[in-house]
Length: 188
Image (cartoon, rainbow, N blue to C red):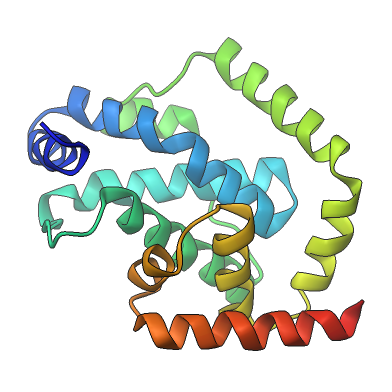
């Protein structure tokens, strides 16, 4: 069975089985968290947005339709929307683990695992001082360029994947990336 087929089956099972959603969570959590950290530069905020992303995915998994694109692309779209909403509103909607446990019956990680994850993420940010400077410059760009640059260079996604995540034609995505990089070069 190929990866897409097994992922498709897992998504279908997750619509009725919280354990299957847990496997999807385990497979995608690090990538989505990393994307959010690189977009925000704030570990705790990134964790909150990642949590909200998975809460929304869990609530809407029943409406998810397999259209040949990966489940992770859907998660990146949700995360991107959450980030956009956060920056537009200037406020953060947080979701606690207690909320996930009580209302959804979903226990993604133990407290020790979360603390280890927080320490590892903070160490990674400390090692990348240059990244923080670059991220500050990227944050001065319009959101449409921030998304494309972050997905391409920090999430290491292909142009095809980025187009799928953003719901735009591949040519438009390539053009956004080119224009975004051109604007970013002016800051350096």
